[in-house]
Length: 163
Image (cartoon, rainbow, N blue to C red; front, side, top):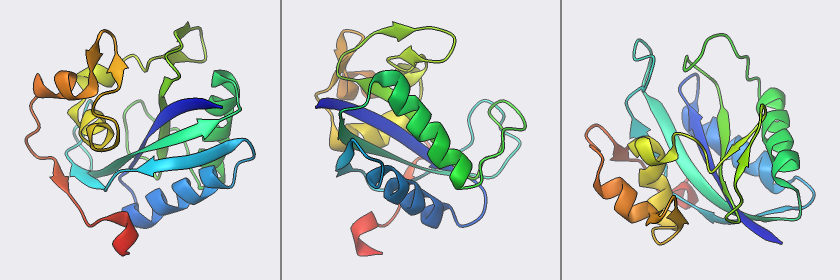
């Protein structure tokens, strides 16, 4: 089993329900078990800022899937949940990113690991730091990377277990 971390985001429709549905879809994937889950965080849009706020979360998993098979499982879950890719960094009903996979380094046309923007995005690092603050990525821990970034506008929502 390999340990991996995924980032989740939604800014269309019932955002919390969509994150819950994504976690459920991933948990039902053969060869994948959800081992940790952050709270949801309300975050401002990044990149293309002319859109609604996001709800973001992170999950830890154990998997027997390869990095590319895990990516395909994430893309399949997005499609089943209604994701349509219209514009880069634009609004989305669900986004599931492979952030880290057992320390693997991958760089090809389909997948870059660790995620190429991971250490630059507070909206990803805040929920990831909740479940894996000591995870080392790019020579520094998640907590160290987050300490360098502006977290303004990122607010925790209710614990997903309380819904």
